[in-house]
Image (cartoon, rainbow, N blue to C red):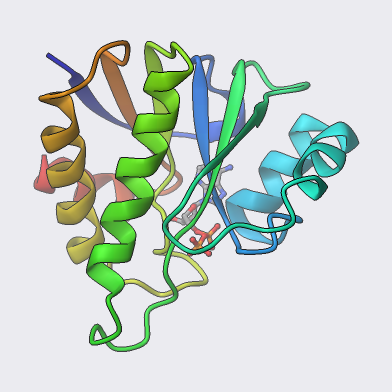
Length: 166
Ligand code: ADP
């Protein structure tokens, strides 16, 4: 059984085995949570990400956590919201599922996600929260190592949406 929690906070401060980064397809850093993670992890993260040569939307790549309290960072570009008819729901579910599978394969027990795609990428919050919780629940049926997943929400509105979805 995977325990799912929703908290309000800053994901760069969370001490878990792996945090997820809502990256972009270049994996070379950006604004929002991506920028915060790169600042907190330090320049070695940039060098580690450079080696991947980017990542398609919905897939995931893993690096060390460098200066973060988390051991690993899993980078996944979520979809940009373009009205909902461009596979956005499936791509967002792919980001959660592929990140969880990568965490599991790397022996991670505790994992923390930010609210992928609901910032600059404009995915509707309530819809994203339902997809996130549904995908985590489904994954929990096949999880081997992961036993706790925390949604780390940066503001109260986001926390309420994930709490409601849960
Ligand atoms: P995206 O491009 O996937 O939409 P953003 O970084 O713009 O990613 O936003 C995703 C979510 O991450 C938003 O809810 C934003 O408020 C939140 N966020 C920003 N900084 C942090 C942080 N340090 N910890 C957790 N969440 C954060």
